[in-house]
Image (tube, rainbow, N blue to C red; front, side, top):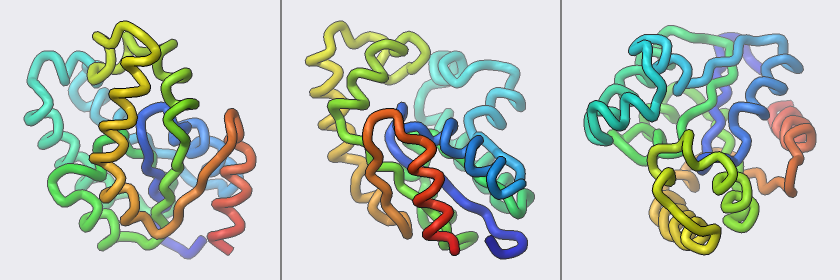
Length: 176
């Protein structure tokens, strides 16, 4: 990894960006930055609370502002984004203007449905979904809409189930 380089991890919610990001940053001995955590710390609220209190449009504006700030101020780090971050406010162009190390973690909808259904209360976009089948339908529709943005990443990785170690290895090999 070159000096002052930022590695950005993108993908749908539940794909493992944060767990991969933490492990990758340890291997590279660099800082790990989770954009959602940056926002939560600044606003002293969870992403769910911000979403509920201010609505998605205002949240996406805050997210864009914080993304810009992180990219401007953090160097030599691994940055994990929220699942929707690449899809709003021309964020992918912004990201790509700072780094070519953008990795899309492309987990299939079957695995995502299982993971997310178990933790849906913590996710504002899916908290009201009642069945695993509804979850699959929602994810497939959403994923289809977001895919053009995710596909702007410079690298795409398709992991198996709980495979964060192999994702880290693959990213490291692509960086070298």
